[in-house]
Length: 69
Image (tube, rainbow, N blue to C red; front, side):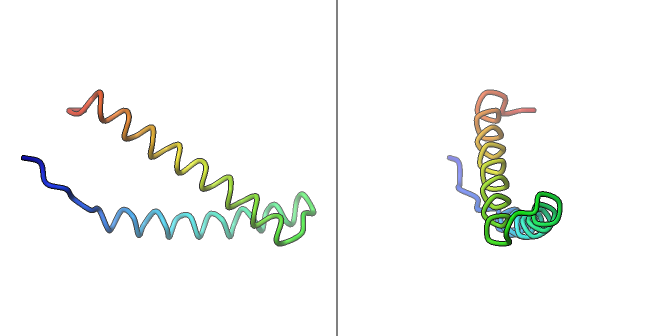
């Protein structure tokens, strides 16, 4: 029987990484593309959340077909 494991360290690290990446990318978008601060934060947030979701979905789908790798 398989037991469910909740990887809290991974979740917290992912959240921390997202917060840092959103802050840095919104700063760069604001400076280089001359976007307003709220717009640059929205763009950075949506880009990072989309890439994180796609990455995790890809990982889980890949691990379903190749569980031993």
